[in-house]
Image (cartoon, rainbow, N blue to C red; front, side, top):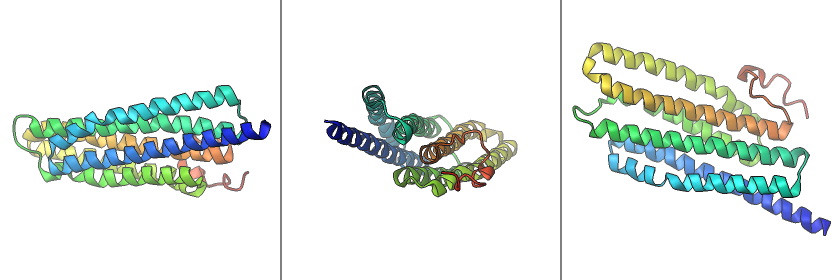
Length: 237
């Protein structure tokens, strides 16, 4: 009976892990779709993305329910407990990333359907570079979770500073556009919201990477600077 219970717990934990990774894949697709709609000036594609957001929300609720059941019925300890906690936190961040993708879609609709001129390519230049950085961070964070790769998780956490730097530079360039032509103000505001969403996606990816480190090493590194993460943390079991 005890062996049966252990096998059932392992199966349920594996199913939760698979659900979280599938949710991550869906959220990655949402980001790509949102940025494609923005780049092509396609409000209809942006609307379709918004209508599909309920799928992510459903997976969020389902993962929470499974996490609670595992905690309440199995009373795990040690690494198993850390796994459930890390997956639960990851789900919350993935749901918020989905919300940011939806926000980008809404800004796209507003940008291309509001009265006046269409946004110039210069206004959106930084959204492309930032979206690549944010998408790479999320991909690597999910890969680190799937393979329990602490080295990769640390690299993701360190990469957040690059995205933050790009965000600050992009804001300065947007300010220049506004000063050169005040007619750019409306589109610049929309672009600012999009850039902010991309920066937040990077923040959530960094959070997921930190959960991986907690899961594997049992160390909470949320308030440790990325530069300090590799100084001894890998040597500690």
